[in-house]
Structure formats: C-alpha cells, structure tokens
Amino acid sequence: MKNIAWKCPNCASPLVPMLEQKPYVLRCEHGHSFDVAKQGYVNLLLPQKRGAALPGDSAEMVRARTAFLDGGYYRAFSDGVNALVCDTVSAQNISRPVILDAGCGEGYYTARLHEALSVGGCTPVCAGFDLSRDAVSHGAKRAKAAGQADTLSFAVASLFEMPVCDSTADMIINLFAPVADAEFARVLKPGGYLLMAVPAEEHLWGMKQVLYETPYKNEVRRDTLEHFTLTEVRRVTDTITVTDPDHIRALFAMTPYYWKTAPADRDRLYAQDKLETEIAFDLLLYKKEAIL
Ligand SMILES: C[S@@+](CC[C@H](N)C(=O)[O-])C[C@H]1O[C@@H](n2cnc3c(N)ncnc32)[C@H](O)[C@@H]1O
Ligand SMILES: [Zn+2]
Image (cartoon, rainbow, N blue to C red):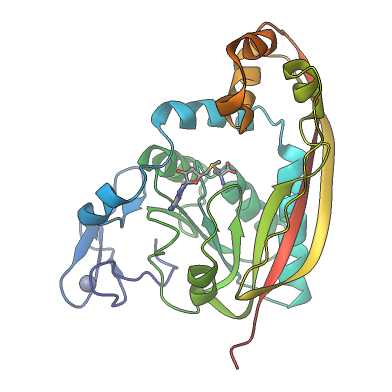
C-alpha cells in the first residue's frame, strides 16, 4: 500500500498510509479514511458508486478462474506478457517501474509480472484494481503470503475511476477487462504504455471443435484508442492439455461460448475427461500519445 500515489475517491486529494494506526488506514488531508483489510487490500469504491457499477465477478467465478489459472495452463501467455513488459521497461531504463493492472481479477498475472520484473533486476511497484472484492482479496492474500505485499497492492476500484493520482504509472496492463481509454491516459506518465491482449484466430480451436459442428476461426480485434498509438504486436501461442474435468468447465466459463452454446453442445464438452486445445493471443502494446 505504501508505494503507490493513491487518490481519495471522495475529494481527489492524495491518500497517505497511516502505518502507525491499527488497523492501518489510508487517509487524505480532509479526513476521509479507508481501512486496509486484514487480507491486505483496500476498498476504494464508494458505497454510492457500488450500486451503479457492475459487481464484478462472483466468488464462484473467481474460484473457478483461480483453479484454472493456478493449474498453469496459461503460463505461456503470462510469460509472454511478462517478457513484453520487461522488454518495454528495460528499453526505457526504468529501474522502479510503476505498473497498474486494470481489471486484475485474482491477480494471477499481476503477481507473476511482479515476480518476473524483480527477477529481471528492477524494483517494481505494482497495483491491481478490480470491482470484485473476492478477486482482489484473493490477490492480496497471495501477495502477502509470497512476501510481495510491500510493492504489490490490491484495491477494490473501478478501472474507469482508478484511485491513483494523474501521471502515476509507467505501464498499465489490461487483460480481458473493460477498456477505459481516457482514464488510462490520465494515470499514465507521459510516454507511458498500455498492454492489452486479444484472442488470435486459433485460440481455443480444440475446444471449439468439440463444441460446434462447424467451428469458425476467431476474427482478430484491433482496437483503435483515442489517446494511444499501437506500437507493437506479439503473438503468443501454446497447446494445452486439460485433464481435470473441473478445469475444462472453468476454462469454458471464462469464454464467451459459455453464454451462447446450446446445452447439448455444452454437455458434449463437459463429458470429456481430457481436452487438448491451442491457445493463441495477440499482445498489443500501445503508447500514450503526447499531449500537444
Ligand atoms: C475476464 S476477467 C479478467 C481478470 C484478469 N485480468 C485475468 O485475466 O485473469 C474480467 C475482470 O474485470 C473485472 N471488471 C469488470 N468491470 C470492471 C470495472 N469497471 N472496473 C474494474 N474491474 C472490472 C471483473 O470483476 C473481472 O475480474
Ligand atoms: Zn478525501
């Protein structure tokens, strides 16, 4: 919690950690204060905003995704994210990069990125934001257990109103969560980078062959962002074998097919005790445009 330039969601003044207080809180000069939960995260989503915002992923969705990701099936993808971030940070000689994970879920990618940057020789300061308290709590607990908590923070917050000051971050990662173009530009330093990922043509081809009689390859998205220029695209591919039926279900639940597949087709997938499928993503690196 200590190393991020937090912003009060009430009055936009800086929030300062009061480390001597138990339980410890973040407080602004106007006396607004936010408890740091025992798991180590802070809830910076104001009650009046909670109703308006979508609740984020449920505890059950979080559990399923955690089990799948911790199974290591997307490790190659996570490694690809880490390599692109490490390359970008080292090309700019940043020794203490501040990196935000907007829509971090349970922090699987955030924690692995923090670790990769540390192993790579820099001193990262990372924070993950998500609307789901269950997800954020999980991320914070894991960071605490791994001894990362001093420089890896988690907060319940909307990525459309991130609780950090302007020009705070060197990079934002935004993996499969909503995109907030203008808000990302606000919190990035001049020349900062945004990394997003989109499924490539072959992504989950093996799963789609089980689900559909005539599967189609994915159409690959390239979002044009008003405040950013696309500077690099890297493809990451792997073939995974999922042998646990619960993990097959969890993977399915992470896809859009979960919502649009007929029950009979879905049950054919659920009956498999093993699924071999390609995974393929394009990592898109965007640079914040200079303000003229
Ligand atoms: C598909 S999950 C991806 C999570 C994580 N990045 C990953 O790849 O494992 C999308 C996440 O976005 C979060 N989310 C949705 N709307 C959000 C918002 N406005 N602000 C912050 N998080 C949001 C959800 O709660 C969910 O955890
Ligand atoms: Zn305040």
